[in-house]
Amino acid sequence: MRTDQKSTFKNTAIGALIFTLIFGTIQAFTSGIAYAFIAAPIAGVIFWILIYLFLNSKKVKQQTSLAEEDQEGVIHSGAANHFKNAEAVGGKLYLLTDRLTFKSHGFNIQNHAFSIYLSEIEALSFYNTLGLLPNGLKILLSNGETEKFVVTDRNIWQAELEKLKKA
Image: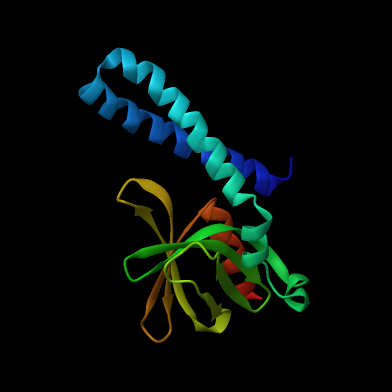
């Protein structure tokens, strides 16, 4: 299994576990504990399979892939969410030699492609999604605007970005 597939597998498993716990708690209060012990694990496994298949579908990969001429310059990439207004737009984030590029998949309300040239990045910091999950990457641009992303292994993103900024 490739590193990005392992990461997707792990992240979908964590999401499914959280879903199972929340769903099981709700079911325990509404339908009883016995029902919750049966329904929650089944629903969690189904949720995990569906999300994993969605993220690895050919359609999503096609919608979030870069143009062929840009693919050679990819330093690092991974699934990400880009916060645009109130929506966490799902897609893929790419770090290229001269810019950071986000491409959304078609299952969002606000589909878009977005690039930030490295020369526009003023500062980089972390934040916790929902105040709990340590997976947020906040980028302050030289024009004063802030862009927020949810990524896996934000330390790797930070290290790679800082390496390129110094070069």
